[in-house]
Length: 186
Image (cartoon, rainbow, N blue to C red):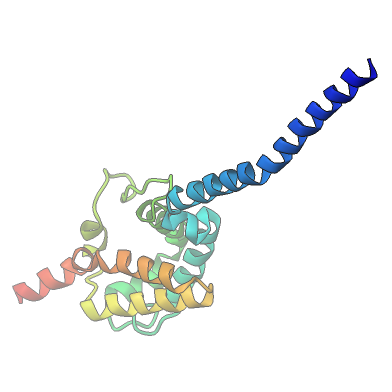
């Protein structure tokens, strides 16, 4: 009886030994599977890389206040429409900050959608929303420069900064259409 017991123990020891010997290979395989999962995991959206809605809202808040104070496009602008907006329409600034936040969230792949509107009217595009301000290409570029300074202030990484600025620049023709149309007429 003692003999069969020791044989049984030996078999258990062998099985345990084999299991322990196989464990590093199994763990290595699991590690490779984990590494493959990490490699095939989809890249984060710009929205996620920017830090989501709260981080975007903080940047938009700073940017919007900086634009109001900017001597070229703000309260002291030579463009009378921009100057008037930044002095007489500041009660609308909180709503504009909200809309700008939605816009950045939307174009950066976030879950929030932007629909531009004027109070009491139907949705409109960026061209119509900016037409009356008659923003020149140079003024647009100054707003883009203010945005770049704000992104630097917020320590937004280089890659994300470039993507935000590219999304902004993609709408230059729409935003400056009011200026260009007026200057073509004479």
